[in-house]
Image (cartoon, rainbow, N blue to C red; front, side, top):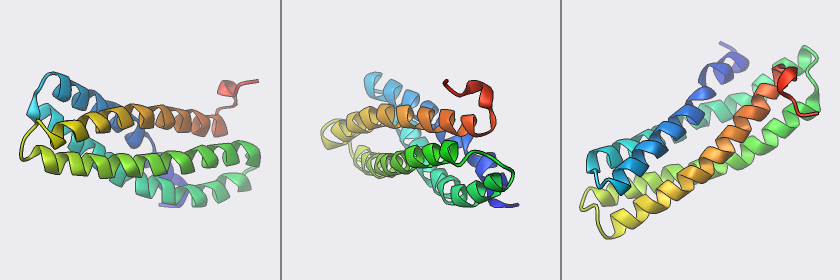
Length: 147
Protein backbone atom coordinates (compact mmCIF):
# COMPACT_ATOMS: atom_id res chain seq x y z
CA UNK A 1 0.00 0.00 0.00
CA UNK A 2 1.22 3.48 -0.78
CA UNK A 3 0.75 6.56 1.41
CA UNK A 4 -2.36 7.70 -0.44
CA UNK A 5 -4.03 4.33 0.12
CA UNK A 6 -3.09 4.33 3.81
CA UNK A 7 -4.31 7.91 4.19
CA UNK A 8 -7.63 7.16 2.53
CA UNK A 9 -8.13 3.89 4.39
CA UNK A 10 -7.66 5.45 7.82
CA UNK A 11 -8.69 9.09 7.56
CA UNK A 12 -12.34 8.59 8.50
CA UNK A 13 -11.59 6.84 11.80
CA UNK A 14 -10.39 9.92 13.73
CA UNK A 15 -13.45 11.89 12.64
CA UNK A 16 -16.12 9.28 13.32
CA UNK A 17 -14.30 7.81 16.31
CA UNK A 18 -13.84 11.20 17.96
CA UNK A 19 -17.56 11.87 17.51
CA UNK A 20 -18.46 8.47 18.97
CA UNK A 21 -15.95 8.73 21.85
CA UNK A 22 -17.00 12.27 22.74
CA UNK A 23 -20.70 11.34 22.79
CA UNK A 24 -20.03 8.32 25.01
CA UNK A 25 -17.83 10.43 27.27
CA UNK A 26 -20.58 13.05 27.57
CA UNK A 27 -23.17 10.43 28.45
CA UNK A 28 -20.76 8.92 30.96
CA UNK A 29 -19.93 12.25 32.59
CA UNK A 30 -23.45 13.61 32.85
CA UNK A 31 -25.13 10.25 33.46
CA UNK A 32 -22.46 9.35 36.02
CA UNK A 33 -21.92 6.08 34.20
CA UNK A 34 -18.31 5.07 34.78
CA UNK A 35 -18.37 2.32 32.14
CA UNK A 36 -19.48 4.68 29.37
CA UNK A 37 -17.10 7.36 30.60
CA UNK A 38 -14.15 4.95 30.45
CA UNK A 39 -15.26 3.58 27.08
CA UNK A 40 -15.39 7.12 25.68
CA UNK A 41 -11.93 7.86 27.04
CA UNK A 42 -10.46 4.66 25.58
CA UNK A 43 -11.99 5.43 22.18
CA UNK A 44 -10.49 8.94 22.25
CA UNK A 45 -7.07 7.50 23.14
CA UNK A 46 -7.33 5.00 20.28
CA UNK A 47 -8.40 7.74 17.84
CA UNK A 48 -5.35 9.76 18.84
CA UNK A 49 -3.15 6.76 18.01
CA UNK A 50 -4.90 6.24 14.66
CA UNK A 51 -4.40 9.93 13.85
CA UNK A 52 -0.62 9.39 13.80
CA UNK A 53 -0.44 7.19 10.66
CA UNK A 54 -3.15 9.30 9.01
CA UNK A 55 -1.08 12.43 9.55
CA UNK A 56 2.24 10.81 8.63
CA UNK A 57 0.85 9.38 5.39
CA UNK A 58 -0.52 12.78 4.35
CA UNK A 59 2.75 14.05 2.90
CA UNK A 60 3.19 11.00 0.69
CA UNK A 61 -0.46 11.21 -0.35
CA UNK A 62 0.09 14.85 -1.29
CA UNK A 63 2.95 13.96 -3.60
CA UNK A 64 0.86 11.27 -5.30
CA UNK A 65 -2.19 13.46 -5.93
CA UNK A 66 -0.10 16.41 -7.12
CA UNK A 67 1.32 14.11 -9.81
CA UNK A 68 -2.18 13.58 -11.18
CA UNK A 69 -2.83 17.30 -11.43
CA UNK A 70 -4.65 18.23 -8.22
CA UNK A 71 -4.44 21.93 -7.30
CA UNK A 72 -1.68 22.48 -4.72
CA UNK A 73 -3.59 25.30 -2.98
CA UNK A 74 -6.47 22.98 -2.06
CA UNK A 75 -4.02 20.39 -0.69
CA UNK A 76 -2.08 23.06 1.20
CA UNK A 77 -5.25 24.32 2.91
CA UNK A 78 -6.06 20.76 4.01
CA UNK A 79 -2.51 20.29 5.25
CA UNK A 80 -2.56 23.52 7.28
CA UNK A 81 -5.82 22.64 9.01
CA UNK A 82 -4.62 19.08 9.62
CA UNK A 83 -1.43 20.31 11.31
CA UNK A 84 -3.45 22.30 13.83
CA UNK A 85 -5.96 19.50 14.31
CA UNK A 86 -3.27 16.90 15.00
CA UNK A 87 -1.85 19.03 17.83
CA UNK A 88 -5.30 19.39 19.37
CA UNK A 89 -5.90 15.66 18.91
CA UNK A 90 -2.59 14.86 20.62
CA UNK A 91 -3.64 17.06 23.54
CA UNK A 92 -7.00 15.33 23.64
CA UNK A 93 -5.34 11.91 23.73
CA UNK A 94 -3.04 12.92 26.58
CA UNK A 95 -5.91 14.47 28.53
CA UNK A 96 -8.05 11.38 27.92
CA UNK A 97 -5.20 9.18 29.16
CA UNK A 98 -4.83 11.27 32.32
CA UNK A 99 -8.61 11.24 32.82
CA UNK A 100 -8.70 7.46 32.40
CA UNK A 101 -5.92 7.05 34.95
CA UNK A 102 -7.54 9.31 37.54
CA UNK A 103 -11.08 7.98 37.06
CA UNK A 104 -9.82 4.51 37.92
CA UNK A 105 -9.57 5.74 41.52
CA UNK A 106 -12.85 7.67 41.66
CA UNK A 107 -15.19 9.42 39.24
CA UNK A 108 -15.38 12.44 41.54
CA UNK A 109 -12.59 14.87 42.31
CA UNK A 110 -9.66 15.21 39.91
CA UNK A 111 -10.85 12.39 37.65
CA UNK A 112 -14.23 14.06 37.17
CA UNK A 113 -12.67 17.46 36.45
CA UNK A 114 -10.28 15.93 33.93
CA UNK A 115 -13.15 14.05 32.30
CA UNK A 116 -15.16 17.25 31.91
CA UNK A 117 -12.08 19.01 30.48
CA UNK A 118 -11.61 16.07 28.10
CA UNK A 119 -15.23 16.38 27.01
CA UNK A 120 -14.85 20.10 26.29
CA UNK A 121 -11.61 19.53 24.37
CA UNK A 122 -13.25 16.61 22.55
CA UNK A 123 -15.97 18.94 21.27
CA UNK A 124 -13.33 21.44 20.11
CA UNK A 125 -11.29 18.71 18.42
CA UNK A 126 -14.42 17.40 16.75
CA UNK A 127 -14.90 20.79 15.11
CA UNK A 128 -11.34 20.66 13.81
CA UNK A 129 -11.76 17.08 12.59
CA UNK A 130 -14.92 17.99 10.68
CA UNK A 131 -13.07 20.87 9.05
CA UNK A 132 -10.09 18.66 8.17
CA UNK A 133 -12.42 16.05 6.69
CA UNK A 134 -14.28 18.65 4.67
CA UNK A 135 -11.10 20.21 3.28
CA UNK A 136 -9.78 16.73 2.48
CA UNK A 137 -12.95 15.91 0.59
CA UNK A 138 -12.54 19.08 -1.46
CA UNK A 139 -9.26 17.75 -2.86
CA UNK A 140 -10.99 15.23 -5.10
CA UNK A 141 -14.61 16.35 -4.92
CA UNK A 142 -14.70 19.72 -6.62
CA UNK A 143 -18.48 19.80 -6.32
CA UNK A 144 -18.23 20.49 -2.55
CA UNK A 145 -15.72 23.33 -2.81
CA UNK A 146 -17.05 26.71 -1.75
CA UNK A 147 -17.05 29.23 -4.55
